[in-house]
Image (cartoon, rainbow, N blue to C red; front, side, top):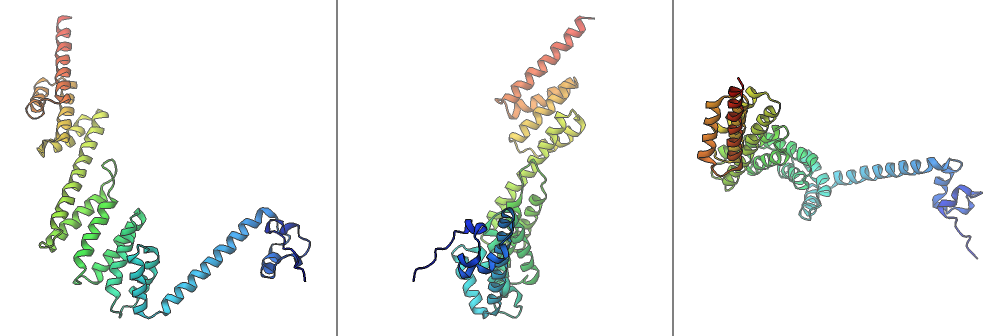
Length: 297
């Protein structure tokens, strides 16, 4: 017996009756029959999402019914393969089993999953999970790891010096806490390096704030921030640029002695820099302008 050809899906809207449609599609066809074509895609997408949600719920129920050992085995297998999105549901269910022997490790591994995924939203989730671990299991063997990861998470969230430095300060705070609580840990030296790098970012933020005030010609505010950099005596580019702008402020105010003092600082510590040369040129122009004004009287 010859089989009747099946109409393509794109032609369903023109099919006269549902005898041309495979039995498995009849229910969907009956639902869509007579519907305007422009709404069909939205409807199919909605049905797909509902099916996906139902499937996800079924999968979660299957995980819930698993023995703890099997959940842990599945979680670890996916974690070790780098399939963190698949490991997370297993760890989440284990965390809910407060009497389980895996609960503390699962809580820590949840943080590790989000940390290793590495996106900003994931790092925020990682911070929450590490904080929960430290709150619930402060004396656990993994507590040093959780605290160090917490500090690293904040460090990864830390923005450039152009932006707010709240996460930078939190990262420093947690690295300091890590060093104080675990002074013999092998990662203490790395924590100190992190702190140094993060502190430099804070110093850079202070310099940029002073520079912005300088450009706005708010010289008192600019001096406040730029002198804070100079007082650190780090003898780096930030100190050089801060002293350069301090010199320009005094030159613009025609404060000869203070301008000369700033230029001498540049000569002593940054003798070959372009900023030292430019400051001297600007200072010379200030004097030339001053003498021209005297001669014109």
